[in-house]
Structures are given as structure tokens and as C-alpha cells.
Length: 369
Image (tube, rainbow, N blue to C red; front, side, top):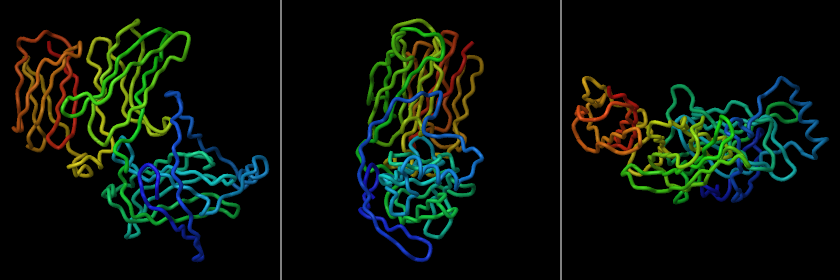
């Protein structure tokens, strides 16, 4: 499979009855389109209907034929970009073919179903489409080097049909960096406003930055594409022009199908949004197990801030930001507990950020009285 995340050159889809045909996976480079964060344009609610009738309509009115297993083009099979509970499949149908009500499932070498997709698409056409196959109860995400089977179920002319595609590749992106988008939009009254955004890594180094602009003469949202490797990052937002309002910002991929973390924009507090990007692929991390680590316990008593790890491990780096986004404390410790003296700090909201030695990022808003 070749494309954005794999390098298999051929896949042999298996069919009922033992017949098989091989096909070449084609690389596709397609632009990410502007999307409305209020709506998900790629998914449509499944309505009660006659599946056979739908297939006939598609065939007769649009010139589509129900696809065979060899008509499916798989561009990528990877971990979900922003969470540890799904596998994502990017696929499309060969020109002139169509797969009705598709769903992808990942099966391991032992025959156990690891992930399963709930049907949320009317069909796969000739445009690339991203599917999310969700981790099943009691299952763990497989390691990056995976051997198993990708299963597609869809509705054909004679009912449910199944295609199977053997996989023996990494579930991590193959490229040095993988694109996603940082976005900002206004849910309130139409305004003119500008905002600076910045992405920093676990060491606080800036890895990308830019500006969001919204205008009364255009749409009330803006987004920019970023390309980064797997890692832990923080998206920072700061208003530079315009009135207060009802704003939101966040990260996403694949036309809004793969939504990442987002946050309201706070006028009087630091706007810091931590996110993990392709966590299981972060170098040096066994992220499949470490991503379940419990958050540290943070308490504020008598203007003293205490941070304690839940498992007795070392805390790592601790940062405290005031309401303007200015860092007022920065320390690092290998102890399981640390205390910050806040007696000399001004009363008000703060944001505490803890970067654990294993790469996990935790943030908590606190109030010093």
C-alpha cells in the first residue's frame, strides 16, 4: 500500500468462494478543503431506506456500478491522528464504481476484531474519503508494525458483501511530517478581528506559527495548514485586534472528519490547547500503554499549589501562566510531588502545565485567591 502512510505495492482482496483479484494502490495528493466546524460535510445520518433501491437509483441516475473488491483504492491505513481509540482508513472507489453503506473493520492475525466502524456514509465514490474504525471494548490498539486484515462490508445488489485486504505495514505515517489544520471561528456577531497562533513542542520551542484573520466582508473563520511529525504539542492563541466575542479554535484533519481538540477562546486567560498528534508513533514512547496514564493531582490551598503524580512517578516540567499568557514559573523535578509558593502572586486565574517525562502533557486552570 502506498500513499500517505504505507508502502505496500499490491493488495490481494479475497472474495467469498476463494476467488481473488489483485490491484495496484495509487498514490493520491488531494487538497484539504475549507469546512464549516458547525457541520460535518463528509457524513450524513443514515435514514431507514431500502438499500437495494438506493443501489438501483445510484446506478440508473448517476452512471455508477456497484463496486467489486478490486475497485476499492486504499490510500492509507493509520492510527487516528488525535486520539488512541480508532484506526483511520482513507479510501475511494475506482472511477464509475460505488460502494453503498460501507464500513471498515480491522482484524488481527488471530482473527479477533480490533476495531469496527459504524456505518455513517451512504457510500464510497471516486473522491478520497476518511473512515474512522473505533477500538472495540476489551481491545488494545495494535503496535505500529501490524499484520492482520482490513475488512470492508458494504451493500451490494444481492445484500451484504465482504472484501478482505491483507495488511502487513506500519500504522504510523511514513512521511517526515503529516499535514493538519489549525482553525479559528466566530460563533457570535460578525466582527473584524485578528489573532496570532503558535505551536510549541514539549521543550517549549516554536515549531509553527501564523495569524488568523476574520472579516465582516468574508467568512467568520480562518484556518492554516501545518505539517508536523508525531509528537506532543501546544497550540497557543492570542488576540491582536478586534472586539471581544464568542470565539473557538482547534486542530483538525481531513475536511473536519478527523476532529482534534478544540477550546473556547478566553479573553482574560491564557489560551493554551495541548494536543497529542499520532501518539502511538512518537519516537521513544510506548504510547499505547502510556497514553492511559492518570493525570497528576493538583490542589491549591492557602496560596500554595501542590502537584502530585497518581502513580508515584517523577513529575517532570511544571509551568505556570498568568491571565496574559506570561509564564510566571518554570521548574523541573523527578520527585513525585512538588509545591509552588503563590503567596507573592496576584490573585486571579492561572493555567498550570505539567509535561511528564514520558511525553504526556497535562493542563489545568486554577484560581489563586
